[in-house]
Every structure is written in structure tokens, then in C-alpha cells.
Picture 1 (cartoon, rainbow, N blue to C red):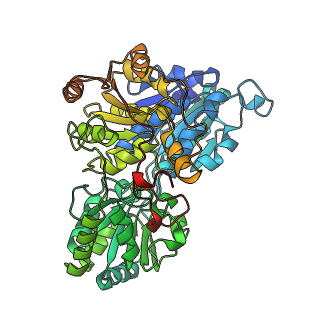
Picture 2: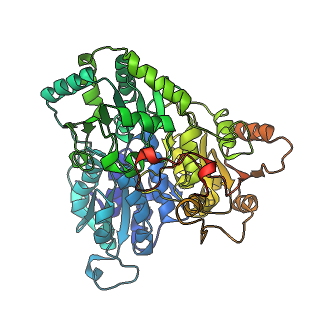
Picture 3: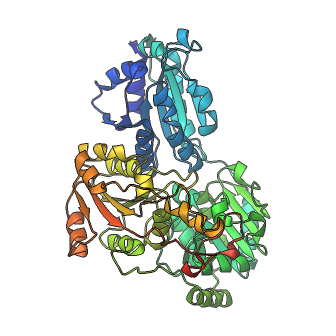
Length: 561
């Protein structure tokens, strides 16, 4: 017979799930859990400076490892601070598990100190959530949370554990089996045959692949399909890296900030093969005008995504990898010379323009300079804004799962803690966080965490002292009326970083910025690299929000329209 407290059982169950690192912050209602965690010889705790930061660290670990990861918070404000990280994980399908402390069950509903109904508040932000009513329930709830988080379309799960449940004693005979993902859903072979016929009959097909392909480990199969059938490939923001950016069939990202040729060619396609995508509005533009002449073949693990935005001629609820394995032998090897020549012509006539990409002191130039110092398996994170879109456009992604960005929720403040999490998961890799001044300040306190754990995170801060993408939209769509989008005071970010314990360099006016960058990347440990940029430098092309992708605004000459 095994006998222990609910808190001790929780930590042992997490150990049995293979958890080795938990970011979080203790407080009054989760101290029994922390006391039990202090005795663990397997799990290392990382003390974050904010619960949102802890959540993004867990995301960084989960996105790089592909397995569920855990973070902890106390009740009240600690719990509410987790909601943005949970909502972000839900939209980007990231398997994380948040364990919150709660006031004792006898005090729930009494407006006790630091009591909030995080169970109710987290319902729309999570895939599933639990309020644990007894210590015995932990034996089923913990494995079930891991099963749910990793099954089908992955997502976040919250477990709220009242303090008296943590301290209660429980007795049991055997440990439950660790929670594992459900078997993949079956699919119809008739659908695979229909899909193969659609691909074989198409004259101008296009592959549109997203994060679902990366998460299912189907990138190599997607590449094989493209090569066998000579089909060009566009990716969503989350799908970058599924195909090497320098592959002859790769046309990069589609949608709001895509290369003009990519959006124009999609307009001409007669078959859109959508794999692991959810037809996000930033990718499709005005949905009813997206690929107007194309039949749609849509494959996704989440049946709720089929027919939600665009009605497919054939929708298949299945894992992308399974479908591609079955589909590949059934499609014909075809050169599609006429379509390939058309693709080639538009690539040359309407390429993606990256101004001053060879100048390390320019926004695109610093991205390309950094890329030359990185290996293919190193990891890139970003915050949200112009720097995020520039990185998506300019960074030469060559491996899946190396690109961590907040795609669906678009959360400023994501980049730094996600980079810390990625570095904790893969300490042998260099992790670069491209950030802007607006985003960095939303979780800047985690610089202390990066310094404390000597994570090999290089923060490349392009500082325009403004909310650049907001300002760009005000210039373009609000009569150039700039309001509340620039800062009156510019902090000394290098001094701030040093204050948190990080080395920092300012490339502005440096006599040898290339040499300094090489030196920084040759050394282990975190560092902040500061580069001032011009707030008037927009990121183009840009499709106006709500417009069709063909209505993209092409470059700086349009900035005053």
C-alpha cells in the first residue's frame, strides 16, 4: 500500500510522465506542491518572474520537444496571469499543462484571499480543465490531462488543485499508467483514392501547408509529395521550415506579408491541397475571394476546422502524416511543365523585396547576418510585430520545429520566455529571439531568468521606439494619423540588460558590427544585441486587413496612400 499526500502524489505522477523541468512561481495556495517538488530528484524548478513568462517557457519546451510540458502558478493573480499563455497555446495547438493552487474547498465561493474561479475563467482558453475535489482524483486527473493535451489536435489543459486536496493523505495499491495520446483517428481509403485522383487531374495545383504538418512530423512526406508531383508549396506562418526555404518548389509564406508571386499564383491555382491548416484570415485575406478558381482538398486532425472557413470538395479528418504516407504511392509522377514555367516567370517578375538585406545595420540585414552564424538545427523565436514578419520573410528556415512564434493569438511578450524554454529543453543549441522594443518590454523581467540559468539565448532587439506595425497601419489606413503608437522616452535597453545580469552590446556606431556579432555568437550564455532602426521603415508587401490577397500593397511608395 502506498501512502502520501496529494501534493506528493502529484509530483510523483509528473515524474512518471517524464517531466524534468517545471517553470513557475510559488504562492500561498500551492506551497504544499512546492514543498513536495523540493524533494524531487528528477524535476528541476525554474523560478520565473511572472506566471505568463512561466507559461511561455513551458510553450518553448513543448514546441521544441513536441511533448506536453508543465508550469505552475498559485491562485488569484497567479492563476489569472496564466490565461494569456494558455489562450496562446490553444490557438497554436501547443500541449502544455498548467497546475494552479486554489483556496481550500471549504472556502471556494467565499471571496477568500486570492480566490478566483480559474476553472470557469479558463474554459474558453483551454482544451480541457479540471477542478480536483479529492486527493484520490489526482490519480486519474494527472494522466488524463497528459492524454488530452497530446491527443488529436494538441492543446493546453489546466488542473486547479485546492490546498486541502494537496495536503490530504491518500492510500492506493498501484500507480496508474502514464497518460498517452489517443490512437490516431481512422480514415477512409476511398477518400485517399479520391484525393489522389484530384491531384492527378489538376493542372495548376498548389500545396498549402501549416503547423499541423510540422506537429505530425510530416514535413519530409510533404516534401516528397511536392517533388513527385511538381507542385509549388506555400506555408502558413506556423508551417515555416516544413520545406527548406531555398527548395526550388518553396514559395514561402502566403497571405498578408507574402511574396507577391505567391499570392498571385494561388489566385491561378485549380486545386488547393490544404494540409494541417485552419484557413487563418492572415493567410487567406478575404476568405470568399481566396483561390477563387480552385477546388479544395483539406486534411486536418481537427474535424472542427473542415468546412469552417472554406468549403472543401473533399475534407479528410486525419493526421497529415498518415494521409501523406497513404497518398504518396497513389499520385502520379508529373513534371507539370506549363505550370512550373508559369511559377518560374512570376517568381522572377514579382519576387519578395528585402530592402538593404546586405546591410547589417538594417532590419532585414541583421536577420540575414544572424542567420549566417546559426546552424540549421538552432532555434529561432520572435515576439510580435514588424520584426516577426521580417524574420518570417527573410530568415532561411531549413528544418521543421525550429521556428517558435505566436501565430494565432499574436502575443507580444512571447519571444523571450519562449526562447528561455527552448534553451532549457535543448541547452546544446543556440536560441535567437528576434524582438522589438514594444514586445520585449511586455516580459522584460525574464531577462533575470535567462541570466540566472545561463541560457544560451541571444536577444536581437531592433528598436524603433514605437509600436511599428500599429504605426504602419495608422499610416496606411488611418490617414497617417499617428496616435499612441510611439514612445516619448527611449529606455537604455543595454543598461537594463546589464542590470539584469546579461552582457549587452549596442551595434549603433560600433566600428566592427560584423566582428562583434561573430564574437557574441562564439560565446555561450545570454546576450542582448541592440540595434536602433527607423520607425518609418514598413514591412511590405501588406494585404490590408479584410482585403483579398490580390490587393496587396507593394512597397514604400505606397506608404502615404
